[in-house]
Image (cartoon, rainbow, N blue to C red; front, side, top):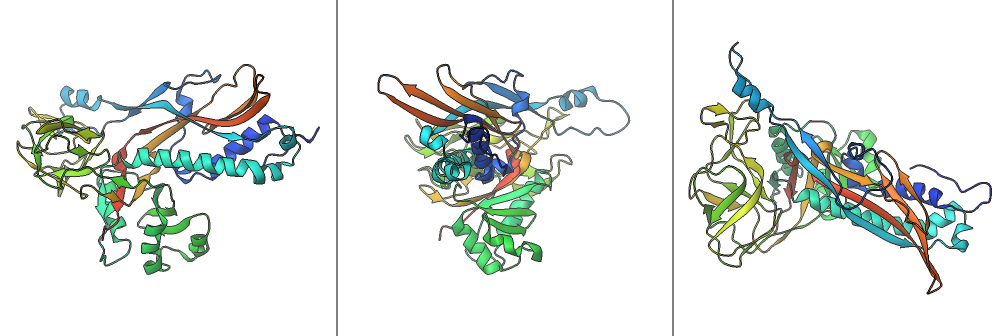
Length: 419
């Protein structure tokens, strides 16, 4: 963590010193924020005088191209390969924490101020922001591995999660798994030192670090979102109408008032995952995740899903970014992975670039004192204002940020056994 000192001239803390120290502490205390891509702020407009809720940047996602057989150039394949996808990262969330920063506090040493005021404030802010970003991430992930109560190896489910990410062509570098203390105990106690090379044994007891296994750096976090499932059953739904493609799926077999929750994962009979390049089937069902909460208004419902249903070939033309061989058949059975009406504990495995977050600077308002710290990967404002009518003043630390899943299939969830 960066080390900033007080104003040496008058030994009084200033807003810029507090803002710089607070930003460094915020990153240090936020495991998920540190682990994902935060370089998108530079893609916003060059004007750094302050952003507002609603500002956004469109992040381009390269296609998975079609490879053409033979020496003859095929324009239709080239056109497919030019179909770049994108994800919109919108600055949509502002959070702040109140801070005492009057004359008495300004006269403290930075060390004392940090211990008494800044650390508790940043701990609360970091916990809240980290938990918010983790929830947004985890409910977008379709790959899910179920952890059995009688695994032959304590990390076997993470091996299955690794397979799911590999099948989606997730890069092998910068992979991490975040899991709760309960899940940590389930795998660390039985596994002993299996996570290590020996040099890492000491880290198991520091800063939530567990070790490295199955290609992941394991880190403990109490901010992991526990998935709430809807009131529908695991089975009973089916596809309503053949030939459906894209990110919306109409299903039958629901009843009026039944709920489906964002983040629930399901499979469709006969819809298997394929290799994105070779188009060969893995002979295993592709998993889809529900992207928006649904309350059924009748016997059918339309669900927003990820990934999109994109057949490998449509009208004799190979499609880029293909996910399945063919569209689901009419009345194909749908099976949900988790039980209904449940609160499910889970871990999140991900490659760094699967998600993106941006922290944008807020300007210091007229009539106040403050400072906006703005670096390439973090922005934070400390601002003090007075209330003339009530003879009082208050200080606040604000962050303004946004989040977007970029390649959510470059992540996977491990779901703990319910019994």
